Length: 422
Image 1 (tube, helix red, strand yellow):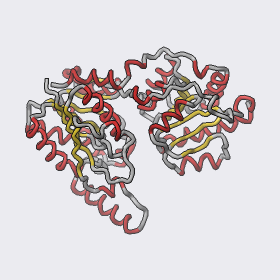
Image 2: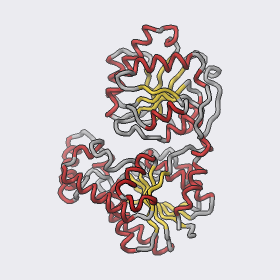
Image 3: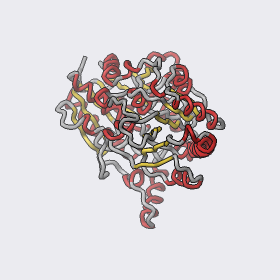
């Protein structure tokens, strides 16, 4: 088996974004096991760096090749200034004119650059394994072209997020039926050409296996997980909190499509605070996120003093905040009720109960089945939140669960990856 691997990951560190976390972590552990990793990603042109840069920097087994991507301002640096608006509209016109399918795909115009560098690295280093992790989804076209040039190469696609399963969400909801059909055709070609398709969820794996039943064995679930190097252990829920406030923490990203659920949550917090002051008087909900005015406005409109926003913190700091919290929060977007995000595992690694705001689905079911926390279902959030806070206040915040989190360490998951390499 060759111990060299080419990875194409648009958001690989130092480029910031959660899209770089998965393969930064895998690369860290694969490098420890002697793999030589060649990584192509988008050049970081932001002031800040990835939260996971330290995992891959100064490692002589990880070789990083940044690509100066095209249409950078359109995808990453929008400004409401007049000239920028004009430039944005012109860029959109060009992308719509010259590219089929989803012209919002960040990789689309830069694929030739990724392809050129990948082909060079494969030739110069006798690479036999290539991983392309998506989104951006159209990076798979680089893999399709490389598979034509090198028919024996082991092409592995890593699907971190659904592509056409939820094509009425995100940027795809703005596409015409013709453009959506083109995206689906590219996805099908990529699924057929790949030697192995990794996904983060059985839901996605089963969906693809049903599309290609004769090749169902090549669709494999490789979940997200947690890095034991980042686990902070603490029983300091009250000891380090001089004000004796019980903080229930959200850390991550809130998306626009959960604003309705978020407002129902804020209303419930206000009403329960008035009805059960003896329980809610020392409860606060802390959101550590990038500034999102639409959510702050909801809190302000309802004069809710128990929901507070804080600046997004560096990884080490937010891990400490989670470790010292009373419980933690997840908001699952519609149609993503199967999602087991990195935050899910980070919360569990610190033995925190999870309040998941979600419609019924695989993840809420798993949380209930394994005593991992509480499900806040839209339209019944007040009732669900009353139960959760009442039980947590009675001492249930540290009760045991039945979920085997040990098998979800990044080290163990990285080991399971090796069987798919040539």
